[in-house]
Length: 144
Length: 433
Image (cartoon, rainbow over all chains, first blue to last red; front, side):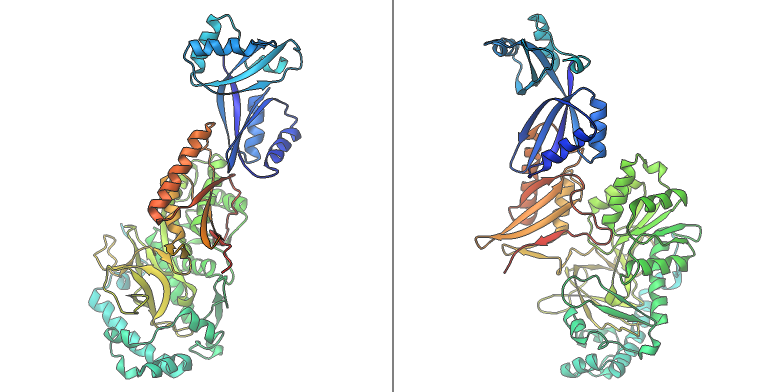
């Protein structure tokens, strides 16, 4: 059920992010979510796209090293305490959170979407299912 | 079964080799005394006359030649025959000072090409092989030397010269090239590119490679051998002495046999200039006893090396030299510590990185800085920043233990370090001293 996130290696230098997004733009690839982890020397850009195969192919052809990582995407009500509900589920199930970021939706104004990278995404999905919280599938991303 | 190009001389007994060397050395000293006033003056200053040199035991009495002498005598000062007898020059790719221009008679070229032919045969080459020479042609000795050697063996020679990687691979595939001759960094690059194209070692027709003209490590050899499914042989030489083929590797791959019938090797202490026994590390010194146009006498190569006369399983009897530990020209002095790029390369490969790196030396507040740029590879990349940083720190620790120096490691994008199609630019020294 998990969704594939593309992680891309970038040098931490002016213009590097721009060069990478240029490749995506030229190939008409829309990013649904993006997060950037950086150190002094390098950065990792993490993106969620509709078509993972197409995006990784154009990135590889342009010389970018990338890897796929499984993440869990959850739809949550865009109200105070909405995120807290989800994190409680993870806390109770002893699931460790590596990082998280938000995903934009074109269709829903009432709901928000969060991308979670956890130590055990299968356990996270099971815990969420038990709590009656639905996770987003890969196929659904294009329609969000 | 081991094959030889000139078995009689390559497998001659020690007594035979010494007898040949004695005879040739005495003749060469006389030739130089009569024809090279520059060296004659050096001999006179040292109080040595041709009649003082009766055998190779007297070699140590002769004065040295160094790169500084080549500069002083540029361009004709060390030429030993009338120019009408010279048929070619070759020149070094040296980046500092005057280029070295070496002269050849036809006989000098023949013996050089024979040396290269010995190397090709030692790597398994026969007249049934297709030998692609991807060293640069022109002033650089790599292309012309191996080209000539390949002709002497009777291989079908493919003179692609360096560059145009796609065309190189097209010829390898279409003509079923079996032997590749180029610099090790270019071999690694070709291998990488073929791998990216999805070619497995079984789909690559190559069986052997003869790689030289720059420093490379055992790990780099293994990588090249694995990617292309070949056996990679080292070859050694320098323009001053003819070019590649002064020494070459055999099937044992435990050092390179020096063509002792043409080049007498010594190891000296570079500071005291005293001759050191076999097995000790020191500067490699060569005396070319056959070459008449550019007769180098006790030429100091600056290569730090050692010699071994242990019996070789290949049957060749000529002395073996270890892969030079470094060239004092390549040697960097950083915070007072001697650093060879080859040491850094070894550490990178040990830690799972490729040999695609650049060393940047700078100076901040009167202290030298060492920054090693390493290309990220798909194998070393993960989504986990902590994991990448941990590997980076392990690399810093590995470099510290190898060099005794703290280096900064910067991970850079793949293929961002310019690949050489001739020689690799490994060092950028920004120090203004």
